[in-house]
Length: 246
Image (cartoon, rainbow, N blue to C red; front, side, top):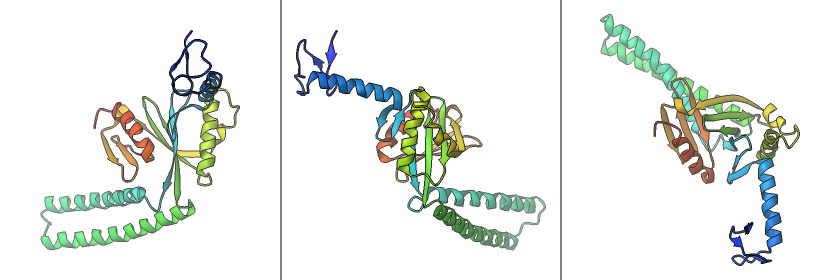
């Protein structure tokens, strides 16, 4: 039976004690290869620096979002407020138009009134965002679970540190494999606010590498997927291969 080097992958010639390609001892390489396989079976295979392919076939990673430096969520708040004010404004203008009550002066007064209210709530919403961000230590931590059907965005409790959360992620992968007891269930208990996006239902995708975000929009569901630079292309290519829009 052919043997292969656990370090470089080259085939080991019969009776050789060392790899002729990289020079590593055969016994050491076989042990390292076995240990690596056993670890992957328990913890999941590392496919990028921060993403694990767990034994249940699900890709999982944790992203720590800096709420002060990355304004993506704040921009989303502003956008939602803008839509909330534009809809009643348009409805009021349409009503005036159909009742022949629409005048230039009335239109300007409506725009000024709604514009002033929007500015007020924009400032109020920004302050609210900063207060929430400060309570969270300016960080928003998310666990992502991705499979062939879709991707789940799971907010984690604010008291978790990233290193601790990554440790829980490894433990949870072990739980999935049935080989790490029940320790990893602590991560599941420490998460909330799940948002699931089904790839087949995605109508629009928007990518922003600058802000480390991939936005997936269904008809009534909008999800934001965050990833570090070193993981971004893997996640983007995986999603592109499973949605009908580009």
